[in-house]
Amino acid sequence: MPTATLKCTHCKQRWPREEIIKLNAGSFCREGTDRNCIIDYALNKRNQAAAKAKILKSAYGTNGGRKKGKTKANYDNDRKTRKEAAKQACHAYIRERDKADNCICCGEPLKPGYQAGHYIPSGQNPKVRYDPDNIHGQNLNCNYFRGGDSGQYRENLIKKIGLKRVLRIESLKGGTDTRTPQQFKRLETYFKRKIKEL
Image (cartoon, rainbow, N blue to C red; front, side):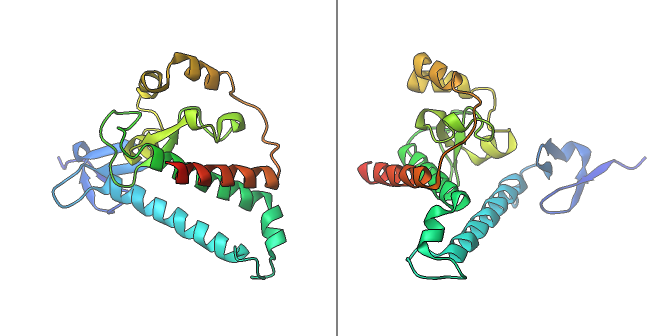
């Protein structure tokens, strides 16, 4: 009887079922000496997101001149653009702040391509979306493939910042994001200044 096989989401090759790891993002062949499809797939997705952000930035321009019909005033008053810029600055600060730390989830040293991972998910929790206590350096594998938490995030976070601060951010779940473009701009400026202070 032939062995059942599954296709790897990244390399598209078929492998015996026992050689496949199933994750939320897809099915991947186990690491080999010449491949690491889980990491390669995640890095490709990250690069695609960065390319998309670059296109968005190019569309709006940042030098104060007109570009594709947008002026600097349009750029500064576009909530979506300002929100994305605030997020990029915040995550850049977290990655710089935590570069010498271990992954907040698995406790292993941070590997190239590590991310700024949220303890309380950012999507429906705008009150803690940009809170530095809620965001920490996290290996791409933990953040991307384990849903942001391998089960050790809270325990390691308490060790890092203390129970009182963890309880504070847990009390801020939920809410509605009513920030204006100008408030997002202030957040971006704040995190860029924090990077310079490190």
